[in-house]
Length: 404
Image (cartoon, rainbow, N blue to C red; front, side, top):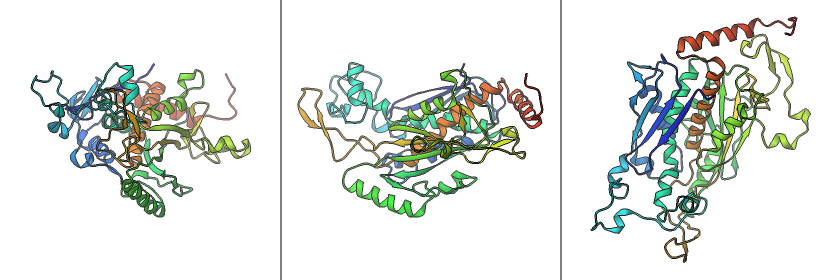
């Protein structure tokens, strides 16, 4: 049974986005301006973003679930108001339009964009105006996910778990990945316009983004989410939907424009023999969170059999180029079936750095759920006691014990 669950609501140019998070124990020290708003600002950054990011200045407003700086154990509701709403009050009004409304004010769109949810959405929901689909399908929705993920991240931090991300590729330009990542990954990359650890690759990617913008094109890429400090034993091998790698893959794949997910070596591991893929098990007495045993490498990316190993968790998301193109692709006019070029709206050229921040949020939500699944508790004190008892047991395990 899921312990952590969340829902989002709202449209890209509607009045605001709503984030509803359930399952966070009572007693978590949580200040939205300190713990949530900085994550929302991180999502808005990155070279290649569009003009929308200059309009919005995202902040979360708490509606319920926190009192005097601590969670109550009840559902936590937050709203992120859209500043651009003032320009869309007619087009996005919940009320029927007046008879004398100027049709242009409704901002209807009838030319679905290839690669977007426009066409499949209007067919599935029996609509004509793609505005009814694209407003919800927009990646603007991820601001609410990041708000929920920020709370999950704050919860995990109480137990020494840290989550960061970095960009490893954009537009086919790969960044060199250091053998050892910085301990404070986000501090190391957030100052980079691409959130990338390779300065040379960053410059080449910036040039590629500029060229794509000039050509009316867009670029995708790859980000890697890294979680450290996880204990061995989150997730389970006993059922298909309990495996943590499957849960993580679903969560990251659900992010708009993500078309592939890897754990550890992922695709490369499928091309190599087992002796170059699996991680030798070695004694590690100084690592109590792994039961006194560790791995000589981490090709598995911190997961074996759907269960955390205690090694850093590595999850990569592959993002396709954004579907809104100034160099428009062929489409069909939904009003009369005639051939026409697809619609275009204000959009990004590339959003891979921001997608990494959203990836962090989704990974945090899955890990918080798995953490409470393992340790349980309605209050932070109860979770702490259960966690500490497990850590003590791991640290005290002896290799001469009789198996029960």
